[in-house]
Image (cartoon, rainbow, N blue to C red; front, side, top):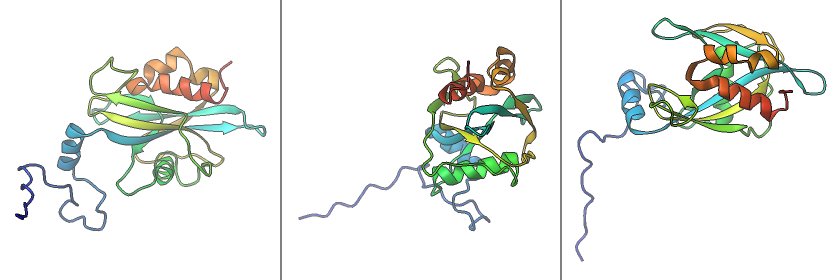
Length: 195
């Protein structure tokens, strides 16, 4: 019986590996590897709407980030970022909350994080309510209470605390990138904060 050897992988389909010089974090992609992955695969993200609650757990304030885009535009958004290879959704959520809100935000993650929705972002506008020029992304979206002091880091310029009604307004939605105004409304509806 002849043993068949597998066909060699076609050129250009090499597995992703750590970029040269960054063997300490094999989950990190170089800009070239990330662009190639975005061209071929949906990317997994987590998004979080930080909120402050009263003693009964009702949402009293909603944290919206002011952010500068790579092309210099100022937009409003929420906490968002990719899930790394080998990283749990819970760890990714905590990492991005800390990156955007600072280490003293003290997010209250539930024992079993369950998203209030799954948002699909497409590079072509109009497929869904969500749009991302760079890629097809699937995002697990959460509402996360925070109890500490939020001091933005990374590319977030500030955190603005709004009432749920202000956060759900058309005026704010027009300032938000990628259809995230819709996501904020869905988040607030999921916790009964829209009256």
